[in-house]
Image 1 (cartoon, rainbow, N blue to C red):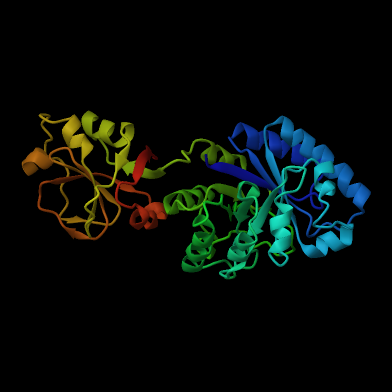
Image 2 (cartoon, rainbow, N blue to C red):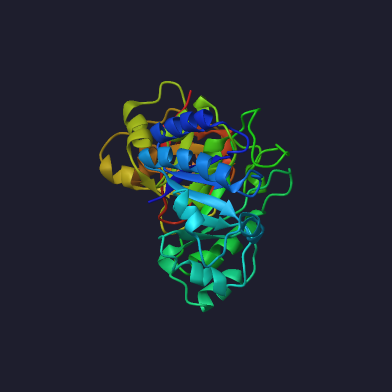
Length: 364
């Protein structure tokens, strides 16, 4: 099951702020926490005290907790890859290696007696994960997570992101990546605050659209908000989202007929397997409403990308079929435009693969 996650930065927040955020996130359906030791400069005793209090509280709310570390952090805190008891003492569920070792160490770490999961940095397109797998790790305790990027234009390209992710997915490993909230006061672990996404193309998109893109790509299991703190409005939008399929926001035309409204808003749609260049075709509605008279009521001369169509009965056995326009084309005069996917989400249309499921949510 796909999880939603939040991030906590103990060096920049007080404990009560973090607990309040955990409460809000829990109510919105979040169940994972990314916390960071890379930028914490306090003593071991102070770290243990604060992290333990927050982690225990988060566990009461059902969260799984990963702590971001590196060999440099291990050296600073006197931790060995052969003894991970420090992380058990702060009641973490896993550690994320922002930078790793040689491969053998990571493999040995997956057999730690504390049951800690070992999370590998996914954002470098190298044979690192292959090397770890060559050392026969406990793959049930091995997972992957991408980086985030605070400097604008420094995030991953989509092509690189997909290539890196495929290296992990081929082993059946669980994956994670970051999205970024747009609150003007949002911060991460580092001084730069120009958003904090994994993918550069997400940097200026609304957070719910970033999540929808991750869902459409269908190669990331857990999606984590990287910066603090999202607004209540952002959390509320996310709380209403489905995480198992793409949900398009649609602006419906005025006075849309009742059956057409039902087709759009009440059915789960899927793209036909015989892909074409111009349309996403969802055909079950024409079976469900066979015999219904679909009148002609809104047939503009041209059909534009993002337009949603329900075919009229003038098209014979196509009557009632729902379509999403992928490429501008001339209307035959028989195709009713019933709504339009919102501008921010039009770019998601090409990611809908044959047989992939999707739904619509009305916005006004």
